[in-house]
Image (cartoon, rainbow, N blue to C red; front, side, top):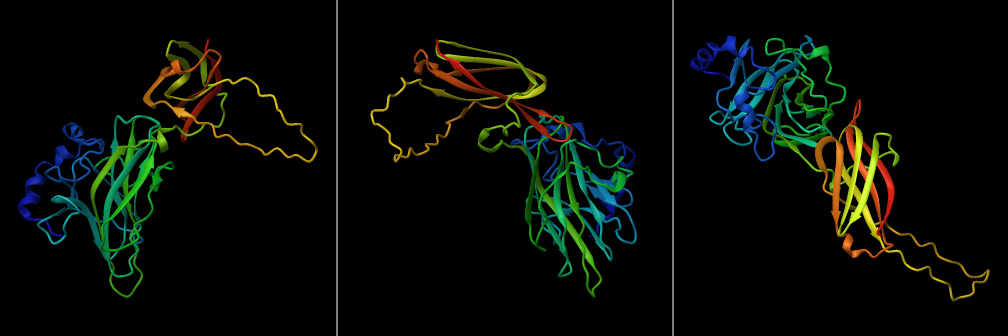
Length: 357
């Protein structure tokens, strides 16, 4: 790819100020999230790719990273893939590309996303198009680091810190085909209020031809998604030491529940209502030749809407208790999800049997 001289000169004049840009991008870009997408400039359509040494053009809001270990890998060139070129973006007029002739690379772009909600699933999706000699293996994927790690020092020093990705990063499957756009996706729960979205490519070709590699990225998004069926993952125990001060009462049509957690966590209740019937007296005399079949019952758990706001004081009110008669009961499980050292953990307390007066 080639960049016109006038564009090179104009952007070069702002180099000094650009070197001070923070990893999270310009403050003016942070308002650009839409449709639940918390990724800044995920479609690369914010005007004016920034120039960085030696002659790279990078989309605003993003950082470069690479592993520079010659001769095995080399730093690729970064550029703005524009619709007026013969390399069309997936959507819109711009895409982020990087490329190299003669040697391969471990390289990509990344963004540290601020102000996300801990222990809620976020999905990172982006389209990639890898190109090269026939037989090239793209080895392209996307990742989410739940710790929100800044993986390079700054815009001047872009070597991957320690030469390794953050150990808790969740990765998508790798791209499987050349010369075609493919949607990659992965999901992670933040352990704090930051996430790091990472693109990765390590294309490789073995053959008689001189190798060349292009990696194109476009149309990225990081969006909050739900747990399956809206339910928190089941806890390892229903007697969590993190849950205490449990209180409950039925007042009229409403069941009121409250509890505390020793750490900030989310809030959800699982419950079902049960009528207490008079015991049945068998009318058939059993003999040793009569077999009683085992009857299994599936408990019809209902769930309350998950309250995502991290808190130590939890309150849930459930209506519909007017359908119960005196002596009927509600069986309740209390759940909260919190960050652990390396993964989010569900704390549970139950079963609590609450009898209607």
